[in-house]
Image 1 (tube, rainbow, N blue to C red):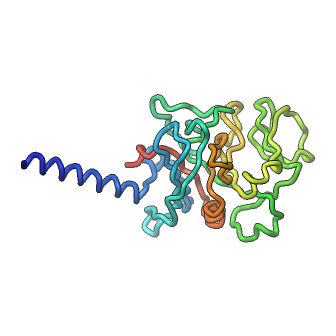
Image 2 (cartoon, one colour; image 1 turned 90 degrees about the vertical axis):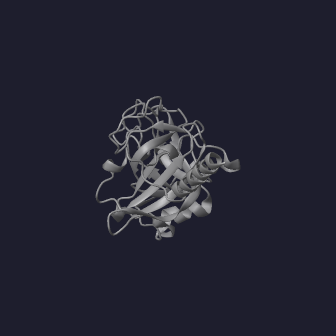
Length: 246
């Protein structure tokens, strides 16, 4: 009887600890040393499994004593059709054993630490005055270059202003639903051919389908995030697995 009672107590303690971990998300220790000191906003996305198409997202703000507090979350996020792949960003750590490396066209969202340099959308600039990120209005000439042979690989460009040297690209203004509002995620900032290109924060695809490698939110949640992001606070996306939390 005593053993059974002790076992039940241990199980209850484990359940309570698990719930506390779920309610108080933490930056994975392998990423924490690479967070710049001038960053005071983190969009933390944690997935239950490498291949999961869904994750939870929290908005974290740096507290006065240097720790992090939750501003909003968890929000429901959608990932790539094949889950996560180890991305190229600010993190210096190596992928865990067996963790896939993100590659062009693999339909994986990048795991790691990434800057969020600007927002974009279909509305003209005057309708984006509420945003605190630099804003790029999408036009029929705004394209994302995913051709690995192009000198503009992994860049958003105006095709009237650069020399065309690509055979494949994404005409962003055609995706009127996905890209009504969004933000650029600086994955593969050195634009190394083949490591993946044109990663965004955007609206969830119809019927909650997975993305091609981006991170997506519902319309209301996306607006919450975009209004919160502030260029002066050096916002970052930190994306990984639940199990990486301390």
